[in-house]
Length: 157
Image: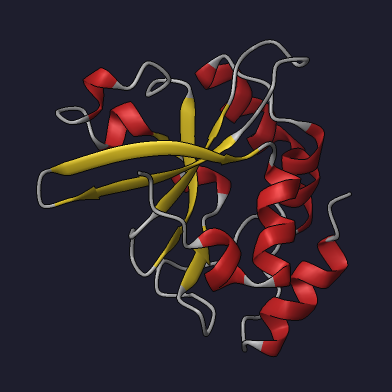
């Protein structure tokens, strides 16, 4: 289960003020504009906090959770590198560590029953690798809450 209270407490302990949640209409516009359905856990997260806030905001471990309006697909952000990754147009990047090393992306679709795994994306100096490490957004957040560096700073093989 997604523990939003614990997530907010962690951010506040790192000096991050609680951001305002996204409007239901903004979530609907995102879903409609991208022909996807957010999983219930991610929808609840965006309604509650909508990321950490401004681009210059990250926690003491250099993690940053992005607001809904900043989500982009791997294909949009890395068009020249991602052609060999079949889910590039369906994986939306939503967080990063250490300014993108790695970035984290969730696979979304229009099918609300589809699996929504989270991948680690590494793209630097010509290298491009993606690997799924988490079964869901909740699994990613729980790993982050338990030990962000150990559980989430996973680079693809």
